[in-house]
Image (cartoon, helix red, strand yellow):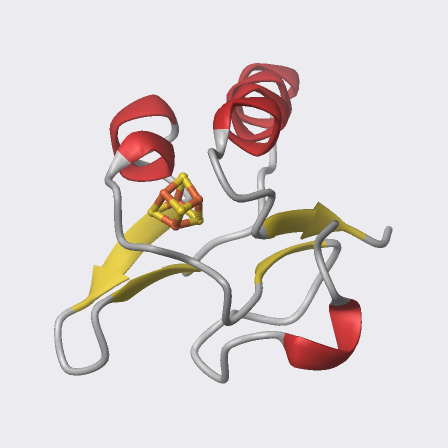
Length: 76
Ligand code: SF4
C-alpha cells in the first residue's frame, strides 16, 4: 500500500505521489514519462508533473497499478 505520510520529497504537490518504498525499477518512467522521472541522487522515482489530461491520468493510473511494490499513490 502506498503511504501518503512517506512521500519522497521531490514529488510535486498534488494527488499522485511516489513513496519511499520505490525500488527504482523504471516501470512508471516508461509508462508515464510526462509525469514520472528519476531522482539520480537518491535512486528512486518521483512525480515531477501532475497529470493534466485524461490520457496522462490514464497512464499514471496504469503506472500505479503496474508498480511492483505499490509505491505510487493517489490521494486526490
Ligand atoms: S514503478 Fe514503482 S518501484 Fe518502479 S520506479 Fe516507479 S515508483 Fe519506483
